[in-house]
Amino acid sequence: MAVEDEIQFERDGHTARVWLNRPHKKNCVTVPILDRLDEIITEVDEDPELRVLVLRGRGGTFCSGFDLDSLKADFVGRSNAIDVAVKSAKVCDRLYSMKTPSIAVLEGHVTAGGFELMISCDFAIAADDALIGDFHIRRALFGGAGPIYRVPRMIGVRKTKELMLTGKLLNGVEAAEFGLINSSAPADKLDATVEEFAGQLIDKSPFTMWLTKMTIDRSLDADIQSLMVMEHLAVGVVLNSDDAAEGVSAFLEKREPKWKGR
Image (cartoon, rainbow, N blue to C red; front, side, top):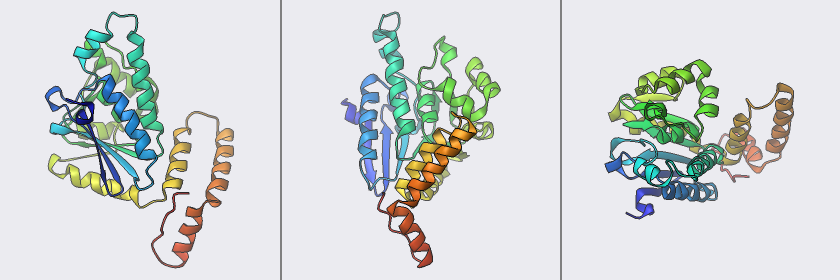
């Protein structure tokens, strides 16, 4: 199967839909799939019509991690073992840092590398019966694409240790209660929940969305005074944008805004 079949990219109005398509292997990823995801991120960010990226898996499961057959053949016990971590971390960070907001739609297994993809998205919505967790420790492995620096910022150190050191799996309801995801829904209402959530993103200024997302991503990485300076500068940039002028004018004229994305 060609990599374009194993990870599928669809444009649907303002929504970019990306599907992992290896259901026979619970959508586990490989290096070529990660490379293609990296390309898709660039394509989405360069398309002004796309306002949100929705990442999910075919066959009722999200992603069970990195393909262990590939991992054993190409990396375990080899001098290049670190390469798979560097690759995975690079692509997950590109997903985390992209201009366009992203939503992970979680069904079935969301483990190991799939867990890392999920925490790299801006938002996550799960089916109530999804199975979500880092899981690496159950195979004496260590996650190389974000658990130790993304998860503690989401749920705190104690709950991070609980997930990573026990290898436990949370269902969608439990993951929402943990603060790990935004919400969960019954499986038959998952699609509608995702569409409703995405609708709250695609009608906003893509320029201001990017700047706001970028500054929030840095909000725990500096002292308050430095963040205040960044905030002041961001306000200045936004107030000089075409979209801010359009947003104010549209409000005063009682009409819907027409964003230019700049």
